[in-house]
Length: 407
Image (tube, rainbow, N blue to C red; front, side, top):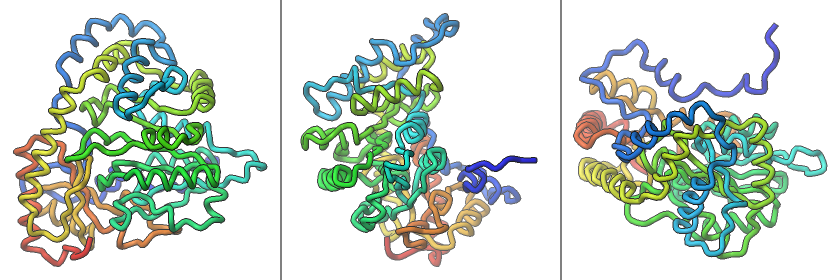
C-alpha cells in the first residue's frame, strides 16, 4: 500500500504540464523554444581548461564548506557587489551546489517548528519559483501566497498581509529580480520588509540569482540595505548563483549569506545531508566569481535582445520592458489556448503564466490579474530570439482578442 506523502497534493511541475498541453500538436514552422530559462550564451572559455586540469579531484570527497580560495573569491565578490565594509564572510558564507539546494535546505533547517515558537506560515510570492513551495511543504509549514503584480513591481505586497498572518510567519521568500517578471526591489521596499521582519520575528530569504542581468540600473540587494540599517542579519539569508550571471547552470555553483549563528546551523546540517560542489567545479567557479568581464558582455548581449523586443512590441499594450532578468511576460487572456495556437500556427513555444502561479485556495491574490501572461525566455541567439518575437507579434496582430489591454 502506498504511504501518504506530504507532497502528494503538490501541483505538477510547469514543464511536464507544458509538454502534455502540446503533446498532440505539431509546430506550424521550424520550432523555436522560448519556454525554458536556460542560459545559452557562451560561458568563460577558461572554464574548460581548469576543469580538465583538475579531473583527478573527482576521486576525492570535496570539502563541505568549500576551499578557502573559493570562499575568498565569493566573499570578495559579496563585499564589492553589496558595497560592504568589515564583513566577516568566513563565518557568514556557505558555498552551495546550486542555489536551489540552498533555498530548499535553508527552509527545512530554519523554519521554527517547535510549538512554543507559534510559527505556522511561510510566505511565497505569487507567481513563484516552484522550489519555494516544495521547501515549505518539507518544513511542515503552510504556504501563504501573496500577490506579486504590477502594483508592487511584481514583488509580494506585504502591506496587504494581515497582522495575524505575520505573527505566525517563520520565513518570507522574495525573489528580486523577480521570476518571471523581472521586477526589482527598491531600497524602500527592503526597508519596509526588514522592519516587518524585526517586528514580527520572521526570516527573509532573498533569492537574487538574476541580479546581474539588468537593463540600466544595478538592482539593490537586501544585504546592502540591511547593513546600512544595522539590521539583525540572523533574520536574513541571501542566495546567489553562477547559473544566470555566468551562463553556467550545469556547474551548480552558488552560495548563501547569513548571520553567523544561522551559518553555523546550516553548515552543521549540510555536513549530514549536503551535496558539496565537486573539486574541479570549486576551482573553476573560484575564477568565475573573480571575473566581471564576461558578466558585462553577457549583460550587453541580453540588453541587445531586449532592445529588439522593445522595437518589435513598441505598439503592443501587453508588453512591458522588465527591470532585469531574461524573460518578457506578455499579458494575454485564454492563456492555454494562446499557447497551443501560437505553437500550431507559428512553431513558437512559450510557458503559460498559470503554470507558475497558485490559483487554488488563494490567500491574497487576484486570479486573472496575476496569471494571465505568457512567459517568453530571451536566452537564445539574437537572430533566433528576433525570429521568435516577430512570429509572436505577427500572431498577436492577427489575433488581437488575446491581448489584455491593461498590465
